[in-house]
Amino acid sequence: MTKQIHVAVGVIQDSNEQILIAKRPQHLHQGGKWEFPGGKIEDTETTSEALIRELKEEVNLDVVNTYPLMEIHHDYGDKKVFLDVHWVTNFSGQATGVEGQEIEWVKIEQLRHYDFPEANNAILNKILS
Image (tube, rainbow, N blue to C red):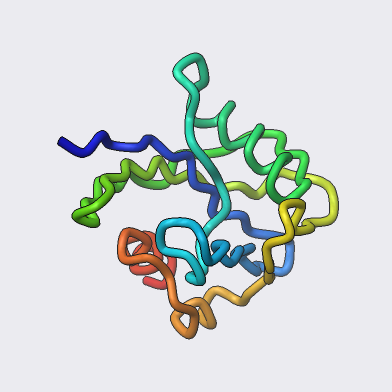
């Protein structure tokens, strides 16, 4: 049986109403596709705590707080994910791909032109509506 991975996902919106996305490294599951930054939640963390930690580690942003947006359970067949998705609008710092990943700030309406993992479709549908 495939274990479900609990992931904190941040839909990070700046003051220009652009959303930060990052390209997954090729060697990872769903590699080469774009994603909303985030990472695995440790057993001792809340979603918000994990997201604040992950966004500092991944894209060098200092997040003040996060707000729940939605939850997604998705089965890829080879991997099950539980995406705990939060809005992030209160942050400081200059976003950089700390782990060498490509990142982009994208206008909301342009997100549909990027290739995201299937589990992200519900996020895209919600923020594009």
